[in-house]
Image 1 (cartoon, rainbow, N blue to C red):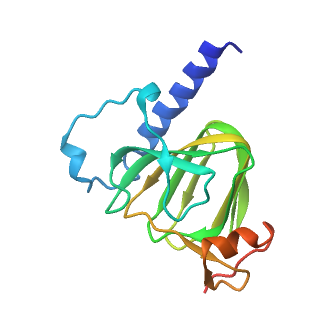
Image 2 (image 1 turned 60 degrees about the vertical axis):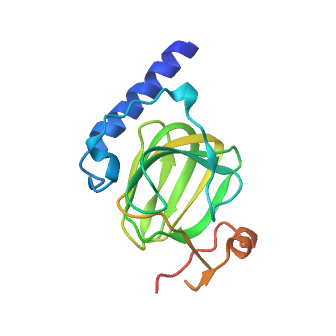
Length: 172
């Protein structure tokens, strides 16, 4: 495939994700009355607080620190986000890259363009990317992240990164 057709495919997947998620993230963000247009070439990806250094995000709508938001999430090649959960309901659509999201009590999702996951509040999951991943991420409340060990106890990011990737936490 040519670079142009790859970009068009990625754009189509992103537009499909926005259309599919239009009702998935409540319209409580302060900017829902505003028209927003963004050029992918000008998006600024920044580190995400309390996430591994290999993860960054560009905010598309809302403010993830205070309420509902849509973001583009980048995970670098080799990135691993250990077992964790969020207070918000989270929705993911894969735009590009290769990897997986493993979910407690659910089948793993292989990251391929167009793959979709809906993760309910407090649902434990982990993610890894073998080839740089770009994900469309929607959350219906402020973003927080709670890392857990194999017994389901909350731990720090530093401790979570030292645990083996296959150690499954247990939900409290």
